[in-house]
Image (cartoon, rainbow, N blue to C red; front, side, top):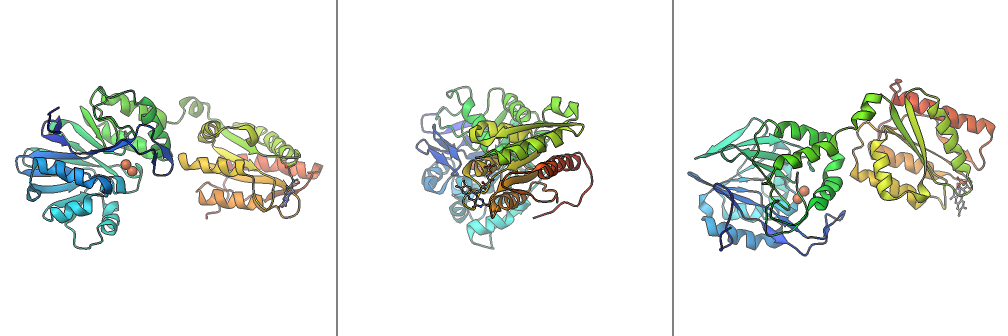
Length: 412
Ligand SMILES: Cc1cc2nc3c(=O)[nH]c(=O)nc-3n(C[C@H](O)[C@H](O)[C@H](O)COP(=O)(O)O)c2cc1C
Ligand SMILES: [Fe+2]
Ligand SMILES: [Fe+2]
């Protein structure tokens, strides 16, 4: 590391990012007890400069000072923007103003976003994707289409001569440590996993597609957009993402589908319904069903159970015209999980209006669950024998559809 703040992370590639040690809440949904960094890079080639990503607007003066330590703005030939979220693109409009000759390289999905953040139609940009590359002097950069990690426009790129992957937010950690490299900073394992859980886990299948692309390259270093640069054993981090994103092999091998029935109850009416539904589910071959009382299930357990479930049934009484909070807590966990392919339904006991069940169904449709068009399972107060039989049948039908019985699905 050189004394005047210039850090060459790999031959001709410099760190020009900034540190934000004070931030404690990121993007509303994440706690950051160690702050974060907005990593940005500068590549010196024999034919000019490439800037890789920017920083949050409030920090842009530091970022420009760092650029000025390396070059003049007219030497910048390209600006690569892997992700247009403001923590990285905040400084892009001003950078383009200072270096109008530079061509901005983005994914096709980023086009409308770039126009929206720069408020101009006349920007010089080009879109890039997998198999496209640019060569500037002695450096070649190959682009990799890695969408939804974690926005639709996100992409990655690979510097051939350095065997270096620019991964965007992938493999990031909100962990501010000026020692910069994973083998020098403190123990950031908790933050690496926390970041995955909150930002990448909802896009597991996209993570696996990105890893397939990454694995085609020999990678000596991963230059992330937040937290430590992964220099020592980068493969370890790729393997962790892979492990966290893969479907449980044991479950897959068994061929069973898991149905989780969650309920809340004050007078056991909804609970009795849940138990009959459970019996119905269990009577279907290839289904493993379980029942959970939401009143005492912590958020971590909710996440784990939702993640492993193929089918989710939520039972709720209607209380003061609504579903009580634990039901909404369960559904708000879905923000951190991939909904793709999961099937869902709702049921419950009510006194006179019963709108909680409709609200939950509506919400599940908007969350993009598959909600099969079964009869609405709303029972007035205490379920009688005939109604309990309906609950049993509901469980059977739900599971048969889950196993592949054809029905027309309702879309939101
Ligand atoms: C405080 C309170 C508020 C209620 N509000 C409603 C309501 O707004 N609409 C409705 O249909 N039933 C309402 N009910 C009736 C319950 O939904 C009904 O008793 C139901 O059978 C309870 O099911 P459980 O035994 O599974 O909790 C309310 C009950 C209580 C105790
Ligand atoms: Fe982001
Ligand atoms: Fe970010």
